[in-house]
Image 1: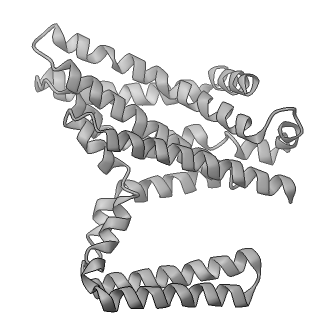
Image 2: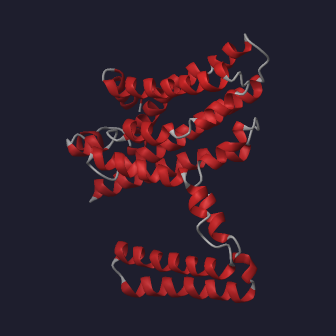
Image 3: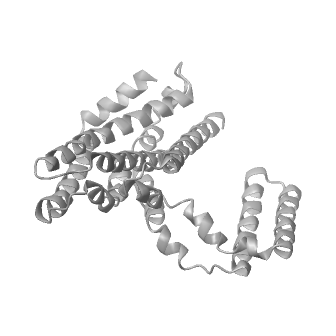
Length: 287
């Protein structure tokens, strides 16, 4: 894994991609820091971080688009897959290289509260809690970008898909407001999701009987639960969409709260995306 990590890290630091990402993050940080802390004399650096969450929409697709897609396009992934190292170590090495590049501007951000303390009182606990949350949020976004890059051999497609997915997560609060919170609408939405899941099962296994049976069982269970306790479905769509609201789980960190639930959530997103990336590569390997 260390060889893969060093190789990827060297590729970012010997090209413009890593430096452009670091410059982009620090440039926007400097702009918001000047506006909030220097001009407005606002003592909370974590609010600057809250305004910076959109930086991942541009920075993450740019940084992750080539991490696996380029290997697949140039057929160098076949060399990696035949190397005496597991697929898990390959993915972890590449992901840790991404995190290392991202950690460089984060380390520099840690000096901003110290700079602010020279001109007034600063709550270091709240400031560094915000930085921790911002770091975890970025790591989760990088894991998503890594997974998308494993699905295609085109860097452009990987970048576009990553942007679209991260933008959907970024706008999740607005998206959830379009849906009704009533039990009936939630039940209908879940019914459509079960139908879609049955179709996906059919595409994967090409077995009509199993797909139909799975879909019918799901729909029957859904109807029974609705008849017994319809209130169970109230606001269900919003609760499901909240799972994908990455920025929403960062809000407690910006309020100076050391949110254990948020930490577990971001780590879970990272683990799931890395697992899916490994499975995607393994599937292609054996096919």
